[in-house]
Image 1 (cartoon, helix red, strand yellow):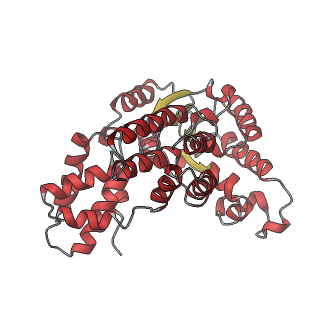
Image 2 (cartoon, one colour):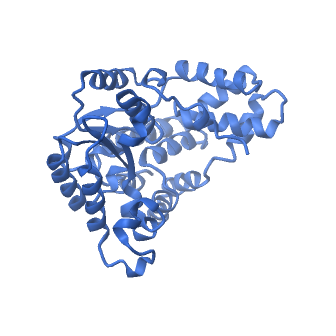
Amino acid sequence: MQDLWTLKYRPSTLEEFLGNEHSITTLSELADSGNLTHLIFYGPEDSGKTTASVALARKIYGNTWKNNFTYFNASDFFDQGKRYLIRDKRFVRFLGIDEPKKIYKSVIDIFKEIINDYAGMASIDADYKLIYIGSAESLSPDAQNALRRIMEKYSTTCRFILSTTKPSKLISPLRSRCLQIFFTYISDSIMEPHLEKIACAENVHLSDGAFDAILYFAKGNVAKAVQTLQFVSLLTQGSEITEEMVYETIMQFVDKTVDELLNSALAGNFTRGRQLIDEMIVEKGFLGIEILEGLAEALVYSGENDENIARLIIKISETDALLKDAANERIHLEKLILNFS
């Protein structure tokens, strides 16, 4: 079975990290200072937050980083609940049972017990341990308040890194205790040499137009670009990859729900538009920014006149600005669809 290139070519050190130079420099300086504070990594999905946390742990702990770095995903706790917890072997000693219906503790009580336990165990070969909590926006307010107290209680033995795409969903007392570091997608000028390096290592041949097509589709998302490159290489079976091959492959990833949402919005069908937004966010896991990007791109090719496209792009841009600090993306997306036509 072929390795996933996103893992194979994932940077293992801060020095290898692509883009986000200011954030990476800040992390390097914090690691070198020996005075690391609690951190919040925020930015769009697949912008390198988890990769940066692992690279930071490697820089601080060296070969023993796995002993001092713990990863939890808040959405596993609070979105999947007890069915997830019984599948993770780390939690067996806390649950004492493998049947979800017989677990009488609440998820938040289990979460507090687990975090307390991990945070309270001092490192045997370092001043403190790192606990990384991904998808921190999934933490309920009660869980966030409990986490804040744990951070205060174990400040000598543990540092927390909270990762989120929606920092506004974190309570102010939690944010005030952390240094916030922003991550974003990278420029094409950084992405292209990275893809060329992978293509060379994997003996994959691409035309210039094929590179441009992948860059256009990825829009700075390294994971998306590398996944696309690998998928196209599997389909072409050693022949040169052309621009047309890339676009044929990309079309398999395009979700037609965005087109239907645009048509509903243009027709003034708010009820259907609202249903589609729920489907994209809840069932398909789209981020608000991804829905807006899809709408903008679909609008350009919709056949609408230039004046109408420009007017609607402005509305999409205004909604994008509102989403930066939104606690509930759905409200702003629904407002956009309601006032679209």
